Length: 142
Image (tube, rainbow, N blue to C red; front, side):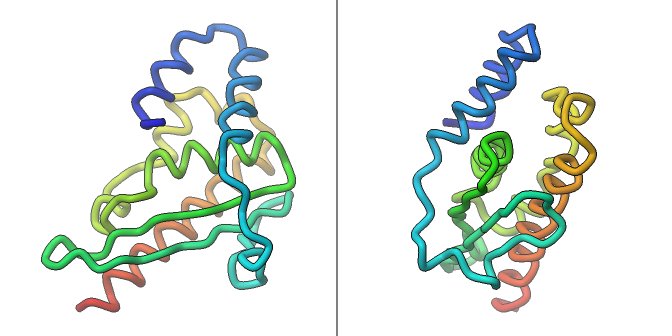
């Protein structure tokens, strides 16, 4: 699902209970993360729940590297946040990833004021991890 579709769906849902359910549905639609990817290297630090994020990088000539992501969490809402991040970032070029502002999107969706501070911090930790991976991928081709 595209990030624009997710934004539109959030705008259609006026009640926060409906938005929470939608967030959980997004998380349920994530493909399962292979057990082999649940490593210490893929574990995201700074999240209250268990979160794993695996990054695949493919060269794309002059366009720079393209990053794809797989992930999982033991918390339903966090899985939904991961799904939103993947809609924004996965399959995109490293430069496009670095240019996208996920925290602004998080605020636009109204998530900031409706999630606990720990979840908000965890979201930022996931964003930082994705951005670090994109920076590292760019540095590796320079």
